[in-house]
Image (cartoon, rainbow, N blue to C red; front, side):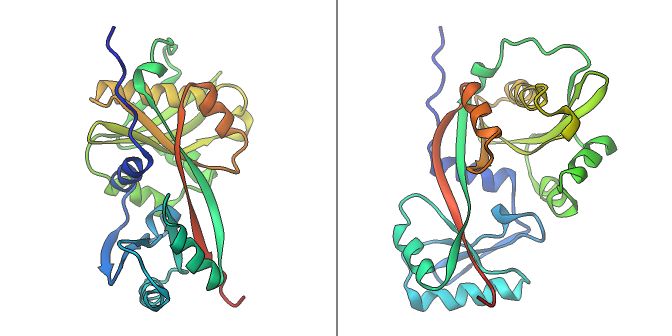
Length: 247
C-alpha cells in the first residue's frame, strides 16, 4: 500500500494560500511585504514581516496600507511573538484567529458521490456566483479567484432538488487549497459542506494534487468539528492584528 505524503507545515500552507488566493499586488516596503487586497478580504490585504522589525518600522507599513485605502492590518504567523507584542503596544487588536487544516486527498476519496449532486467547473456558473453573493462573497473575492493561476475550479453541490452550496479550489505545486465555502442556510446540516470537500478532493486528485488544505476561523464552531471528523489534521495557526481607527 502506498503511504500518504507527509503533510506540509503551516509556513508552506500559507505560501499555498497566497498562490491560490492572491492579492492584486504585493511589494516590499522596508522590512514589510504590503498587499493590495482590493476588497478580497484579510488574507490578501494583510502586511507581513520580512525580517524582525522595531517600533521605528511600523509607520512605513501603516502609511503604505493607508495609501491603498486599507485599514492597517498585519498577519502574525507562528514564531512572530515579538511582532505581536509590538502591535499590541500600538493599539492593534487581535482579529480572526484561524486554524490551518490539511489531509492527504486519498483520505477523502472512496466515498461515492451520487451522480448529479456535485460538479467542478471553471469559470463558475452564474448560479455559483449567486450562491457566493448570498454569503457575502462578492466582486472583490471573485477577482481574487480570477487572478489565481494554475488549475482551479468552482465546486457546486446539490442537496435534494436544490443547489446546496459552493466552494473554490486551486492547486499550487501539488497542494490544493479550498476557499470560499458557502452553504445556503436552508441546506445546512444536510451534508452540503461535506460534499463540497469530497468533490474538491476528487477534483484535486484528478488534477495532480496529493494534499487538500483549507483555512478557517477558530470561531467557526460548525466548520472546525466537521473538518476534524473528516480526518483533516490541524497543522498550524495564525491571526491578524488590526488597528482600531479613532480608538
